[in-house]
Length: 305
Ligand SMILES: [Zn+2]
Image (tube, rainbow, N blue to C red; front, side):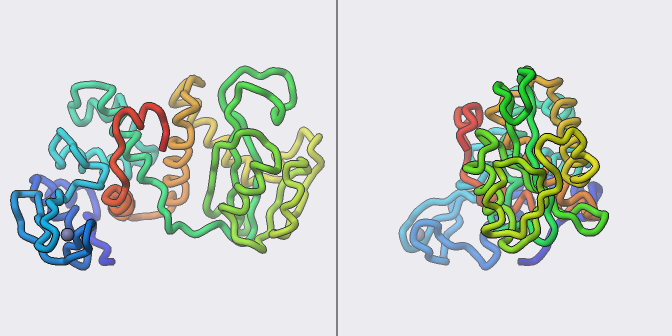
């Protein structure tokens, strides 16, 4: 597909000043090879209104925003596009209070819902699993420390994390909320996010038993050691960065229902931290936005997706 995106904010502002320009952009992203009826696959249409297309074969009426996160949007697309621009191009993203101020939205609630929708667009189904040298570990967020060793402690959100090592540098990252730190949770996380045959370094935690079946498993230390930061430096650096962002944003109070979405957003930014092209990040989120099923506000609150 043609990479078509504004290169910077000046270009963005010039290009997406009017509703029609936003509609044209959505059309082009949704149907890069030309219109296709989502019901019958037919390629010919009549234009029945500004953003409405009528399939010439089955007569289905399709809005260019239906089946996208913009479905049923009450605010103009120009405002949504600006939100998506800030969300995808600002280095540390944007929080709901700031977004509300920047866009002049009526309520914090609206800004919060918009951000939740945008976060669902940060994971791409075609993303490639990690490979090569990988460090894996888990960490905990929220809850009170029970005094027990972290892996057994209750009332905390547990997160599995894996990051590529490329010499001294870090590569790409994956994070997933897990129910507990058993191998029943940790092994599927590894299988789902890392290419078979990769070399995975972990500490000696028993939950990693079994990794050697599909990977080259390297145990760095026994699970009892207090000083594992020095031996799995990559993954521990990432964990401290993530904790700082999540706890800094929510002052330690966050709803565990939404944690995966915050982690997804973090991973999106982390994996593009060296990209020089803000517009490309905008384009990638936008591509995802046009094929994400619309979320009702209720589904957003329940965190069911
Ligand atoms: Zn049709």
